[in-house]
Image (cartoon, rainbow, N blue to C red; front, top):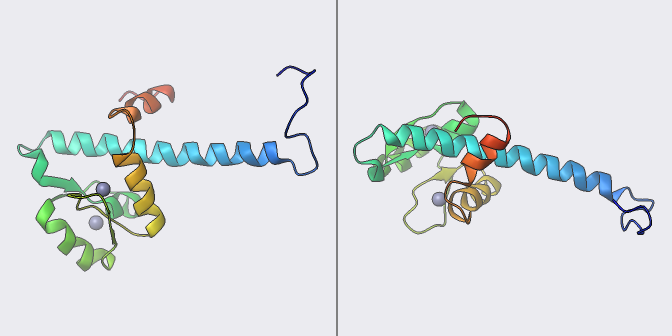
Length: 130
Ligand SMILES: [Zn+2]
Ligand SMILES: [Zn+2]
């Protein structure tokens, strides 16, 4: 950073530090979803009709398991094991998440990324072969 330029964050609130922390947290969250996308892709690639199957978001993030279900069975599974969950608002998506926040994160990372394989790049940046 150019020392002659005034630092907009140089005040008593230490905003720059908070912002860095925030950025780091965001990165951890993004990385967790990158793992989810990777597991999902791996799991779906072994099924013949991958369009009919979906990974349970709640099992993955709260049970540490990659569990595949036929799309029409996922609702039942979530009702039986996870108390229902919050259904993704994306038309045609059957994924349910444990909290509204997670449903929002799911939406953002699974449906709103500009590049379909964004997660590959992120994992590679972290030295993980995707
Ligand atoms: Zn589950
Ligand atoms: Zn979705």
